[in-house]
Length: 114
Length: 107
Image (tube, rainbow over all chains, first blue to last red):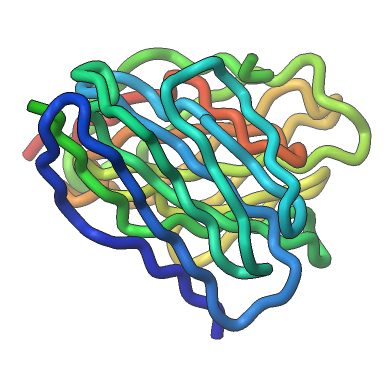
């Protein structure tokens, strides 16, 4: 069965510190991978998506970057965190199959920048 | 931009059916309609999806109009645990969330 792992569950980081959030997928090949952010009381905002190794599309200008070094690994990074980077970060994957694209979300990382 | 519109909030009594509407008037012929829900501080959970025909699973039913410009998610017997934000999404390579409908199930 397909599973998605996202860690850590919670993170508190000082302003100006670096960030690295990792997401890995098991049980599928060549998935589309996504990073979303949800600020407090707000909706889900798509940050990055990837259709293959080394292929990253950015949806919004921001202080973050993403990388996909392996087929089933997606990393969200920042060199220097800002207070506005606080939020709930979700990784998701999808693969086209009969009945359209199915999306599965990780359990999320709650980031607080202090 | 999200390709769907939903009411911002709805209330439902426990044990009654919850009917959540969604408009997707610009949907293309080969695009699916997906429904997800997000319970506070968790990742979105898949509920159901459909293309043209009505669909039913253990969680809900999905009614799609003949012109495919709107759909309704039905939770037949809502429970308190169904309180969540419900998102109606037209499938594309990028899953774009709108603001969803905050459903509150009241005892």
